[in-house]
Amino acid sequence: MDLGGIRDRLDEKDEVREEALRSSREIRRLSTSAISDVHGGDFEAAVAKLEEAEERLDGVSR
Image (tube, rainbow, N blue to C red; front, side):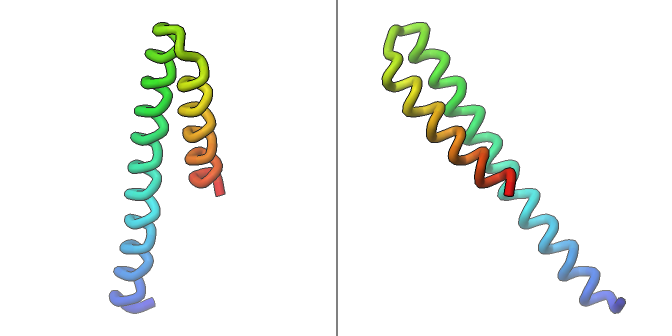
């Protein structure tokens, strides 16, 4: 394999890693916010955020 091919593979892996990091940060933010909603008694908002987090997680798990 030539250096260009190696670079392309590494770039692709880096792009996937960066997307996973972005998604995990968003999932964490949504989860933290859902916990705050539960403590505040806003269960509907908490459920909505957890559903959104679950959708994000499904996207990462592919």
